Image (cartoon, rainbow, N blue to C red; front, top):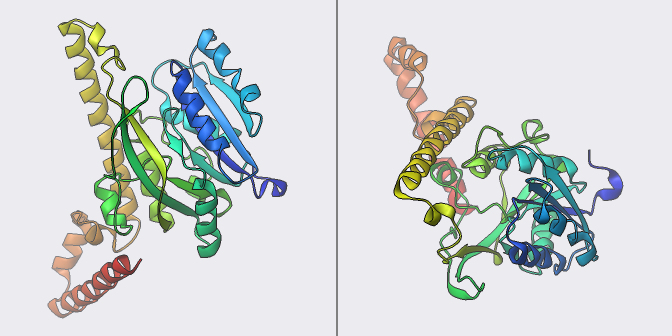
Length: 312
């Protein structure tokens, strides 16, 4: 529940499984360096009560400039979507963003996104993100901007997720009821952010700012995965399980797309999906003049949608 006295509070949810003490401190420091107050960070740690858990509990004292809380999810397995929902429930702010434990924000990230939300009365806004490759010492190897798009397009988001999870800020007071509580699909351990964004963008058009205010960090170090410690049989099994997980999650996301598209009369045509069998039968049974009039109407609306996309 978002209380009125928290109407200016911006909360960030950060999930972690531990093991990256340098990176998580860099991430939190980037939040604390923002020129907006008040700020809250909710760190959701999934793991046992071990040395990593003890280290994470030191974070509130290290970052006194923000309201920082650390909560623990003791569940086993890959619960990345559940961890986001836990953080969502613990966050107190009207405005909410996400930040992975190895990514960072620019000092003006929050203020620019809030200004866009307030100027447009939109439910969410996103900024541009830089991709930074770095070595084991966190030194920059290269930078690029592969996520940038000239304009937002729901159809483009349908095809690929070009919005890293820390690029956007949400005004939770304006969210569609379907997204108000535990909005992340907990059966997903891949593409959980994309599934959420598909619904967010379907119900709410975003405000877009052109400034680059976030960085997506990728390590080039070979030791950031335990695959190198496995024998060939172990690697093959891990790869097989990974392929199965991606296939399972892809099926869930594709079903989500189909459900959303079917909820509006123009959805299947706009997204290039096949019409339901019943709709095809109805068209075949309809006299030809009616089909022509409906086809013309749909063509005009499609052109209007494309024109609006180019203008936004």
